Amino acid sequence: MKIWQKTDRGAVRKENQDACGVLKHAGCDIAVVCDGMGGARAGSVASSMAVDQYLDALRDALTEEQTAEEITAVGLAAVDAANEAVYGQAQENEDCRGMGTTLVSAICRGEEATVFNVGDSRAYLLNASGIHAVSRDHSLVQDMLENGDITEEEARNHPNRNLITRALGTERKVCCDTFHVTLEAGDRLLLCSDGLVNTVSDQEILYEVLHGGGVETCLERMMEIAIDRGAPDNVTVVLMEYGKEAEE
Image 1 (cartoon, rainbow, N blue to C red):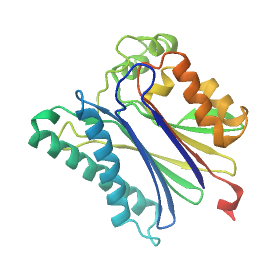
Image 2 (image 1 turned 90 degrees about the vertical axis):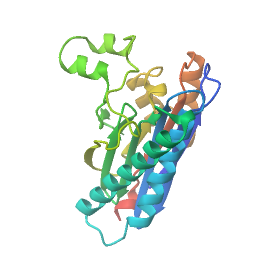
Image 3 (image 1 turned 60 degrees about the vertical axis):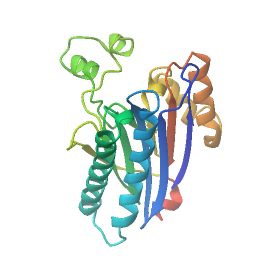
């Protein structure tokens, strides 16, 4: 599996409070994106700490003999470890009080992928049939959309679209959703912070990834679109491509 990552502070923010990371370990390809919140510096502390603790926990616990179910359990334990670290820092450091972060991650072994999600950073599956949301936002706007209170277009431009209902590090315990995807050759998993989806449409993402030219440069092109449109938030994208060599 090939993986590309890119993060930028955007066109408005003075600091990048997003963080991302990748890891190849125990036969698994792993990627994670976190979007921090909580003050001038605390957001970047939360996101970078979450990425580091999450990947460290996976590095310590993943083995090549584990089943898909065991990998999911290890992933959830890693999310718990990241939550505990961020929450503990927020309690101990006055400057970090109230900080938290989203987390979206994919752990892939062969054709099997497990996605973990807390907050409103997203995972998409992209292939010849289109772009498909894998994760579900934990946000006020998503709840309103599912209740039929607003339309898709209203959700995209809603003034409260940044209000999330679940975050990592804000409580002693965190609830993480999991999603399972079976990949086929040529499938791509895209993980991103909301800074991308608030400025670049799903169809534009699909076009850039599948039809806009080389895969190696598509993240740069999406970043340029977001920044050209004013990118009021930080923008982070990780792209994972499942190739033919992965299934042989």
